[in-house]
Length: 358
Image 1 (cartoon, one colour):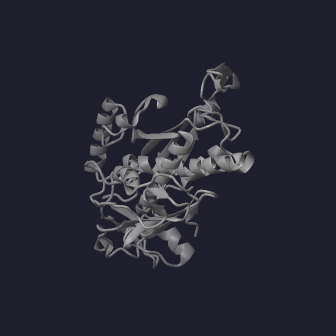
Image 2 (cartoon, one colour):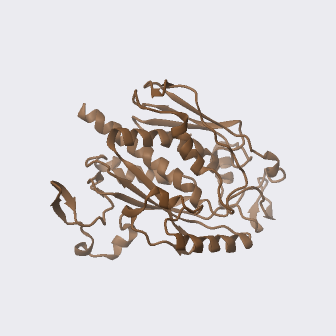
Image 3 (cartoon, helix red, strand yellow):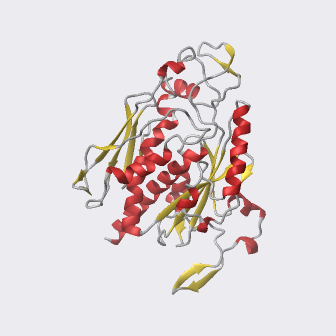
């Protein structure tokens, strides 16, 4: 089982949804990087359950730094991060441990490993992403300190309701004004109505997260297999429930002619720039110095209040309504998770660039 991300900036996450704790082990973080638990806690607080249609599981998600930091500075040694689980309710899963929940990992994990933890999905649960957010906060601090990189995410779509935003103009305070994390206040209201309709029907919704990666230096990413867009796509697709990723114009580029899609070059402010950014800031798998813009599509929450058809471990056909504490739509809470995975991918590229200069 693969539980580690990165080549130079390496992160291993551990823990299960209803275990005593989840956490991350970071190796490769440079020394003398200012780092406190407060730096990490800010992003963990953003990931916590929020809003009327989020899971009622209200974890504190208080992080502890167990190693690798002394007097507020990283030592260059492994950093262990611990986040206790205090609100697990394993009794919610009594009675259907032997049933395979539709669109969950229950069946595939059982088939692959011969054993699984049915309490909240175990390691397959999105609870694991809290460790990614903690690690991503460290990566984000490194990117700001060493390269000036800024990462901003927001909710671009929930169900049928879509916001039309200019990615370069989205600011973090605009995103956090609404529990649905949509920077357009009027569209956020429409998203709430969409959520209310789905919740009233015992159903769920998916959506799209937009990401703007700003001030990424020219030259990050490697040709052929380790293209920057490939690394970022892998990072996004490793997040539970992600079903698609596109950069710049994405699939819409397939509808255009070359004359319509190409980004023309021009000299601006003493350096080579593009007049448009339909490529999304990456060309030939390498950053070109423009904003990197990507969109990440999430499927609807698979656990719903409506009865669903499934089978048991013994092969019986069953109609069952799976209950528990689940988000009607987890897309707003996925924003800091997507930001974290983008930060982890870019942190690896940052250290590679620093290594090449040395």
